[in-house]
Image (spheres, rainbow, N blue to C red):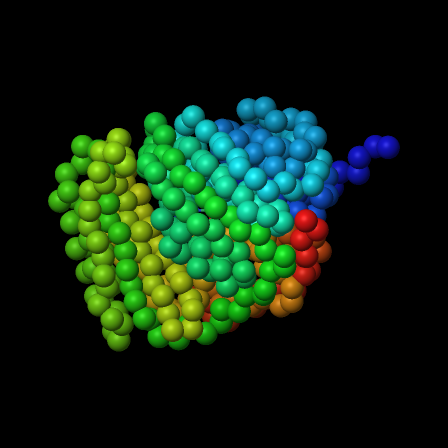
Length: 359
Ligand SMILES: Nc1ncnc2c1ncn2[C@@H]1O[C@H](COP(=O)(O)OP(=O)(O)OP(=O)(O)O)[C@@H](O)[C@H]1O
């Protein structure tokens, strides 16, 4: 019998790697064969790159999938998953490919594996255009926990661009069915915390500069407790290469956790890194946004699978989010509606399908 592949257009709107990751995760969970065409067609280097290929091959392993097109630069993949198997998995990307993005594709799948899983990942822990692992654990995870998904995270070493080599272990407990999320009231800010780091040959005073500039931006806010930021240098055992960055988060009385982050680059001043992250978080707080623009797209797959209606008050939807909604609606029939509240806020509602783990 020919396999009935559902076709997903990788060129849709954002046209990046996230369409592939979300489509593959849904495919494993729903056991629905997919053909993804035009992969990363809107990127200057279309097709599968390292991170996407390692993520895909990990899902092949987790589900004993039949796959075509799992080669570097491939612009089309056919993927037919088997049953999700919990267990121990190991991925070494051998580059600075983002381990957060490899986890982005594997986490929803392992959450529905019916038993505990352990995933060891080697690659980039703090790299551009992806969540830094600290954003993942400090900001994304508490949001996911509201839906019933969580994970434990052990960081052994950090990996930066271009050498990578960061290593972590992620422990994923199983969940049967996800709860809807409701984040529409901002409440009062209870704490603002953050980390300003340097590593390798970079001097510790750069981390102090990031901290003082981030603090200056956050000090413009009225009626919030003083922020608690830490400036530090990674030990050579944890980080062998040069790297720097800032991760900030605010937690509110109603359970909102929002964040911002910046990553050091050549010729970017440390003060600028701190100010940028500080200003971004200060704006989210003063506008009382319940879900930030990066958590926004990363919640879509979970909201779609949850049982019942989810509601989040968030920033205007990003192209990443609109694209994730396209994939979710096509793959599982969840329904999203977007209501513009004002120039800073959108109320996003999702009628989730109430998927229950078959394992
Ligand atoms: N600064 C950031 N903080 C948190 N999350 C981020 C940040 N930057 C990007 N992300 C997240 O990383 C993901 C990037 O998806 P995207 O499709 O652009 O990535 P990709 O696989 O690297 O693909 P491509 O190379 O095709 O852009 C999104 O989920 C986005 O929300």
